[in-house]
Amino acid sequence: MAGSPKPEVLGAAGKGQVARVKAALLGEHAQSRAAVGLGSESDLTALQLASLHDDEVARALLAAGESCDLHCASALGLADEISRMAPARDLGALAEHMTPMGFALVKNRLAAVRALLRAGDDPNRPLPRIGFFIWELEALAAGLGAWSPLQAACTHGYADDAAAIASVLLEAGAERDAPSPLGDRPIHLAAIYGWMPVLETLLAAGADVDSRTVPVEDAMWRMSSAAHAERVSDSTPAMVAAREGGVETVRWLLARGADVNARDSAGATPLHAAARPWWGEKPELVSVLLASGADRRARDAAGRTAHDVAAAAGFAATARLLGAGR
Image (cartoon, rainbow, N blue to C red; front, side, top):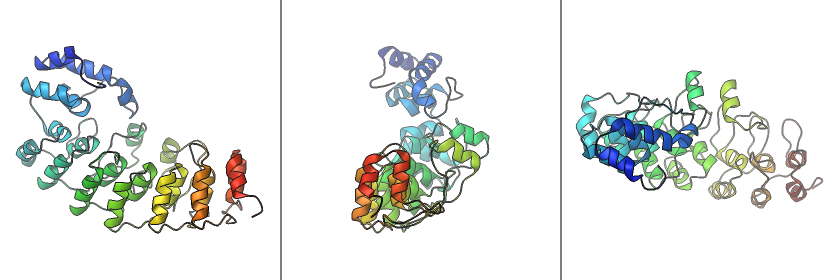
């Protein structure tokens, strides 16, 4: 539910009317569930749904006597409950294709992540789904790989505790540079969305500011990429941030030593990426790169300069900034 729960649903939760609560939660959160590829029905219990969508309703269900399982405890950040239950439970058990660690990461529960790791959870246990992308279930059905907890933490890096969660996972032995189903390593995932505290944590742990992406399956590329995106690998964090139009992220990465003239598998530089960001023209991004020494004359494998890329996209302001003959 958006905002405070509706009184009637809280009342139903307080009476332990789980079927009514579940139906209300599924209806209220149909849009947010659809945004991550989920339908209007679910095998989750009312308490599991509430633990993901509404803490107040979840607490009312618990007070009414509903049994708290490990997934619920993880989503609610109940570290003592996790410590009590985890040794006797399957830490890899799935609920709507997510492990208890997945529930903790979706809700950004630092205490739960710590408790699960203390209970012996594997910091590299594969996560079939991380609850972020609309195409995840399609990719899962196609057998296109799984995520790691660190990759999930870097993708959900908007939360206040995201950097601390990444740090805890790294200290527990999470693979710092493992590529995700998208071909992005954790540092690329954080760079896509501009989660600077998470980026700082990864760099402090030894991640390469110019780390490279790896190739992905054809089907995954089609599912996850913008229609006009050119398929490449060997992209640096600065390149992926530039494609997303992340002005401040690119500026931040350059200040920490990112190579302004690095080349991807198609011979393109960050300036080529900035000349046509996926979601719209960003002349300021081009200015940031030029001020940092980007070579406007650099040509990709197809012989195009960044100016050529901008002009072909109809980005007139960017093309003027780059200048055809400079």
